[in-house]
Amino acid sequence: MEQAGCRSDQFWEKGIKRSILTKAGLSVTELSGVEPNPRIESVRKGVALCHTHKIDMVLAVGGGSTIDCAKVIAAGACYDGDAWDLVLDGRKIKAALPIYSVLTLAATGSEMDSFAVISDLSKHEKWGTGAQALKPRMSILNPEYTFSVSQKQTSAGTADIMSHTLENYFTPVRSAYVQARMCEALLKTLIHYGPVALEHPDDYEARANLMWVSSLAINGLVSSGADVTWCVHPMEHELSAFYDITHGEGLAILTPFWMDFALREETAWKFAEYGRNVFGLTGDVDMAIGREAIAATRAFFRQMKLPATLHEVGIDGTHFDMMAQKAADGCKGSFVPLSAEDIKSIFTAAL
Image (cartoon, rainbow, N blue to C red; front, side, top):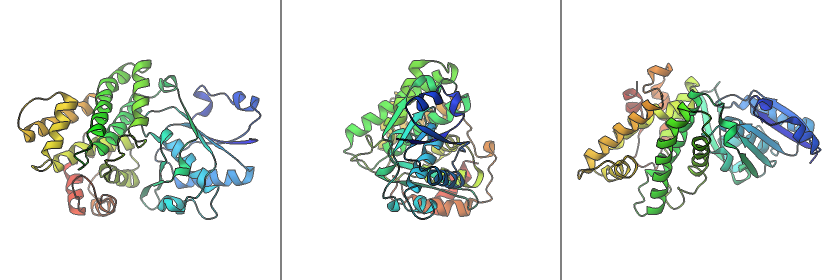
């Protein structure tokens, strides 16, 4: 390959040297400064670079935002229309340039899945898209590349991974025994190693285990055979689309309030399973164990120094009606049915 397109956040400060690529005979065109909650504007810039420089592969060096942006750039380079079309409808993604990644933040699992999330903040829209062509051909996961991740992003990344796992775990498929046990193992790993990484950022064992869980939570392993529509993520996407907050922090705020809403007699069995198998809670009354499990979830997020309310991240109720309606459209088929009114009540409780 004679051309390599590179997406990075502080690309050359992550231990990746341009000389490695040039010695391999590769010509590099760099697109730096990809935003958190990556923007469609950056995607369009990348697509234009691909056309101008005849790029034939895309290398993403960074976290999920960088990788997601690279994925849609790679697809947009093989599409005749505007890349936003591909965000709105993943079925239009028929091909993509080969995608490679070097992960520097354990959070989204983008290094091992076929999905991407892109924002158009001018429209207050943040949407996920997906296609097999978006799955990276190869990803390099070196825990040492995450030693310099800040406390804020370590906490938010852990919350993001936990949310991915919980979204898969809370499924109505009772027979998905193996998938549930795998989810519980991932959750216990996060609860054990998240605080370690927070206090000791250069702890290789903690960073390595978080990196493993990041990939395993969303690569299809724990959801296969136990499919369920995610609901907390569509709700958080509205927070990010309107207020551009850190995704993992939004998930940490909303998850316990969604749990409060979702816990009822017909779902108590699942919350009790969660409490007993993940937090080691004991007792015979499922509803009581479920409430304790929600309290334990809140306590873990506090331990990780994550915000607990929407006010803490600068969000009020101004746009709740519009946000709730848009989120409801993406929540159909979730573990507990959610109407726009239900979602607004969860947003309001989280204030």
